[in-house]
Length: 416
Image (cartoon, rainbow, N blue to C red; front, side):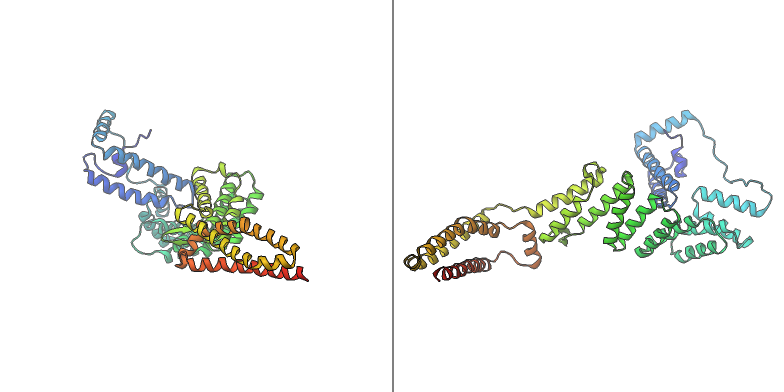
């Protein structure tokens, strides 16, 4: 349980109004949400912890009864010692040492405005101070500025490199954060490649590189890299997660957006989705969020293959079957006498074929024509074409005439 004073966390007096509390909470959350994207994982975790603390502060101070109980507990606890407002330097002997101590104090407390002032003051004394350039770049990048400081960040990073920074990994991570803000996925991918070259065995950098490669549009390469990474680290949970994410992104990419929803409109898409999902290893062991996504994609694929049964489609099936049977009966009636009188063997052969077509081929054809899957319905919706009875009837007659032509050709050969 935290021992921090909730009012001190917000920088408010104990008699602050609910409106003051809400305003302070908004400002604090805005600051710490930015910190959660900090490239240093310890700093990012600290931002997440502070956001959780702010949630508890809100539940306590914005609930009148809970706030009254909390104020009473503060009174029983007594006044807490307040930290010194001014940080003390290590030696206090020189202006440079004081500035360096102030700069590090501002860095530890994520006070970006003060950090900029201290770093700039340090540059007036020592223009080649690498630490000041590094911290100035970070302050410009993560600070809450009203205008774009992108060029200032890049200048500070280049100056840090110029004066021999030994923290290339940190500089690259700041450049990556800047590229991500700009939406420059090619640049992000290049920086991730450099980070991976610095630490080839760091699975975090391998994962970041593959994801950035996917975001940059190199899907085939990202899929191949994900497969290779899983082969190199078969029991690594992070690699298993990455492999599942990339292949589910591949599966989810098949389809088109229609009325704000991704729909499947071809048989090839169904096959591609099935192939992508089949490569996800141990899907039932995935974390809950990924498992839900996997099931949603799988259900979408199954839905696209489903053939809905409706009364209208049943009527269409019956009409198609009896129309085809009627046409076949007429054709057979016209040919029956001639074939029987000329060649008994031909009569028996074609009679068998006609029976096969009427009771097996024709029902199957009528079923696939009358009960199309949802992906075909989606295809017609996207092209603006609904069910066309004329086109369907023409197709049926075309198939029947083709079969009839084959029979006549076979009959002529038997007559010879």
